[in-house]
Image (cartoon, rainbow over the protein chains, first blue to last red):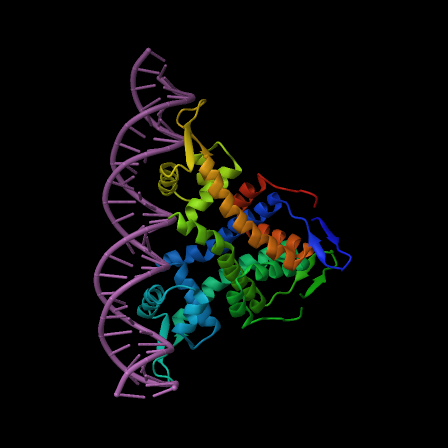
Length: 168
Length: 168
DNA sequence: GTTTTATGTCAGTGTTGTTGACTTTCCAAG
DNA sequence: CTTGGAAAGTCAACAACACTGACATAAAAC
């Protein structure tokens, strides 16, 4: 990868359109791989990717409100509501009226909801783990750095709310 | 990122579920950013992401056949056909009957098709370029490495058919 | 007490995926 | 040369899931 230092010390990258296009295609193909395993599992449950996303973020932040989930997922409330309705009807998610603010609904995974979330998450983590292993530790760091730079600022905020700075 | 060397020299990564989950969320949020700019442009043309993908790969391999596009995009031929029909009706793509094999249709961008593809591609490349700049050259290398490792082998094959090994 | 906020619902529309049935073309076995 | 199967593409119908807009309910905020 071509790069130079300016007198000021800033790193410049000279990127051809071709190199950028390859990056774009890499995102496209990788995202397909990224969702392939959960998609197969979801099919058995007659659920879609939208349900997976909801399960993921409810699992991540138990007791989260509908509104919070909306801003994370970036869909309309009508769209999210359909998804949550299915999950609640299927006994995977429980919706509890807020105590402080009774307008709010706090969302929790039920036992079977947590089990499905685990199944989905494990499959996806294994794919990720395998990719990380193949690529090596420095690559992983770079991967995360570029992904974060690619997010919209507002989404980056959501991402960093649960930032893991582990042992890096 | 924790890593050690085995006596055999293989690099091992010890990745917590938490770290892997963050990687998963990074993919999710980054992909949203990745598609945001083209999506806005496509809206003006009353087209969707599927049209963008078709335009991209036709632009990349002019004269490609429908069948080839199918295996790259991983959708049914009926689904792709609807997308191509729209693009052809809108005068963005031209479909020429094959000379060797008259069953095949070779696909080309028209002048206005190429113009739209440029517009979409430029927007997406700028996002990618900005992210690359922020992240720095080593990060870009790692990013590409992990993404490639995340692909299904069959998709990786498509990805590598146009491999750019530039000045790396 | 009026306004705003949080949530949910109904109706309608659009994109994109699916399957099934069909035509045209090619190729190869008889 | 014909015939039958496979391949490429098309048309039609349907399903999933996103969207907008309008409206309802309840509770919090001012």
